[in-house]
Amino acid sequence: MANIYAADFGDVVKHAVLCEVLVREQPARYLESHGGRLDYDLADVEPSPGGIWDFIELSVEFDSLAASTFSGIVRDLAGQPEHPGRYPGSIAFADALLPPDAEVVAFELIAASASSLLEGLAERGRSAQVNVADGLRGVCELARPGDLVFLDPFQVHERGEEFTSAEAFVALANRGVRTVLWYAIHEPTDSAGWIAEAIEDLPGTVWQARLIGDTTEAGLAGCGFLAAHLSPVTVVAATKIVQDLAGALAVVRPGLRLE
Image 1 (cartoon, rainbow, N blue to C red):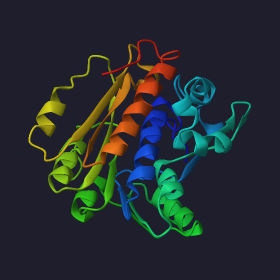
Image 2 (tube, rainbow, N blue to C red):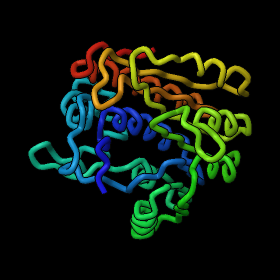
Image 3 (tube, rainbow, N blue to C red):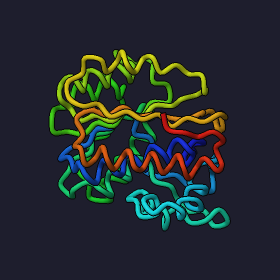
Image 4 (cartoon, helix red, strand yellow):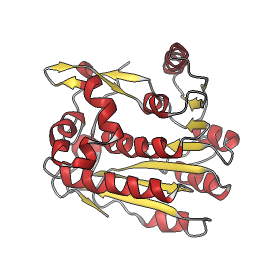
């Protein structure tokens, strides 16, 4: 099953930041709300402007991007546009960067994808649970302090069985769980007012970043992050990656800027 958004601009930004978080936080257990597939055949997709092919070409001008954990993983796997390889899903990045004894817990609504994901992780020797269930409710039920939870909805306010992704982020952060929320910005005019309300009473430091441009290539004007309970070192690294992504990808995404 192909994912037409795999390796797009949103994936590149999402995974470049996630890699910096994973390599520094090193949780003993990683939970993800929307598991997807372990990897994707790039021959089946056409990455949008700012996607993997543009990243590979443009990141060489930015030392932090060229030397980033994300770049080190994808360059050999992705190949080149004329000889496309494969692009990892977020679970594959986690598997590559987590300690060998760390457990992965993922949720996926499509049974075939869940089965493929579990089989792939087992082949790699990774201890994992892959549940065919609503991921927002699932991570909120299972996560505890010490874990790292990754939420990556396409619609941040779409409600699952119990939570929206924004509500799940707040619930987890209030319990002291390290949590990263990636969300799509579909239009340049999309309101960010919900963010201040969501984080107003949260304990600890919340990191946020919004990368937004003037166009809506592949359905996105940009994307953003909210993260709670990350270490200061991780926050510095994530901020630097987002800043340099804005600089590099503005060549192909007009008006791209960090807010």
